[in-house]
Length: 143
Image (cartoon, rainbow, N blue to C red; front, side, top):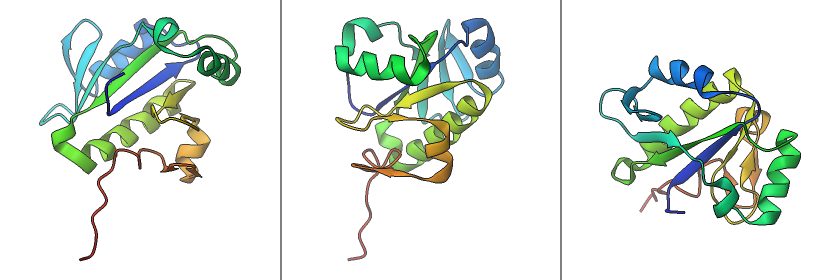
């Protein structure tokens, strides 16, 4: 997978439910592809059908355990690199809304501890690589 990719895996949601939800919040570019937010987008959202060919067997098994089965659908969020930390902020905002509306988990594509559930995001939990999306944030030093 390319860098700066986040994937939300849903447990039971369908495109008939997700698409109208996204249409209210993002600009549809074509079938199952949106830009978010509408003005000056920082994220591109699109269908991710390749989970079975791109995920390692151990990652698939962990995901099945978390979701109670294979995802009903997966949505890729591609961060616009030129937007840096604001893209991370927008992604976190959108993911919290999506996971509040639809059951699922998010994969921040890090090497270990990469699956996050809604409760972890809401509480600001840290994992081996920091808080959610810290792996993509630019750290500004006080020189």
